[in-house]
Image (cartoon, rainbow, N blue to C red; front, side):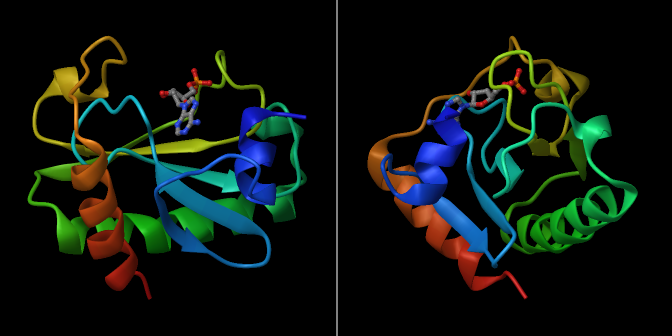
Amino acid sequence: MSIFTKIITGELPSYKVAEDKDFIAFLDINPNAKGHTLVVPKKEENKIFDLSEEAYSKLMRFSYRVAKALEETISCKRIGMSVIGLEVPHVHVHLVPTNVMSDMQFTHKVSLTHDEFISLSKKIASNFK
Ligand code: AMP
């Protein structure tokens, strides 16, 4: 069982920003930039291109809605998107509010306090439509 499935089942906590029956989105715990969010299908699958075309399209549609909420909440030049999965083998889309190229480099990290994560996740969730 992946660490993200444990978040989905509630065994582990997360700073959730959006959820429906098929997907969950929560803040990355080690963000590249403020608002860095992961969008995750609830059905555990390792690699994104192992998804069916339909599941892939649904993931992109849900990610689109989360990206819109991020744009509403966080001042940035654009939302960067990336899929890696070398650390957690459960499909997830990284959405990163981006101002400079280093925001999309996964060696460039920012730190937030627990309270900052909570208030940020609530703000993003309130802008999710
Ligand atoms: P990758 O699998 O290479 O796409 O990276 C996995 C991402 O998941 C990294 O950016 C981690 O910071 C993030 N991550 C790992 N565990 C958690 C967690 N419990 N909650 C939120 N984000 C996590």
